[in-house]
Image 1: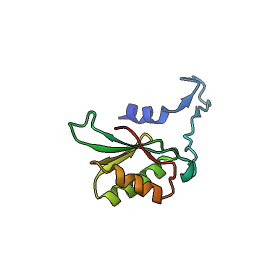
Image 2: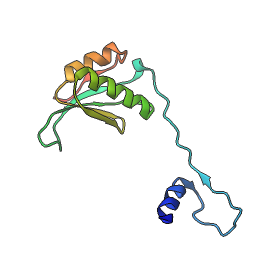
Image 3: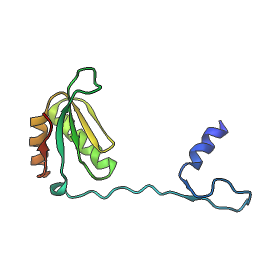
Length: 120
């Protein structure tokens, strides 16, 4: 059990892998949150996606730049307004089903003025 805890503790080290000096202090990476661009400057694209989803359609929103918490908040808002499930991760929001027109309308109302439909 000690090894697993130790591995989690060691993630994010910069430079030195191991030192025999008992007083050595490792430098760790600090995760930086991306600064959120204002809503009217974000170029969001709304797609219908069917790939690798067992033939099911999803509405895919890409182009979001900002912290993960803001992405999740926007995803929750869109899923609630459409009355469906989905997810928000890796800079993309997935809303289950074909809700492209509704999502574009909601994003425009929310101030994302550079939102466009994309794809076929």
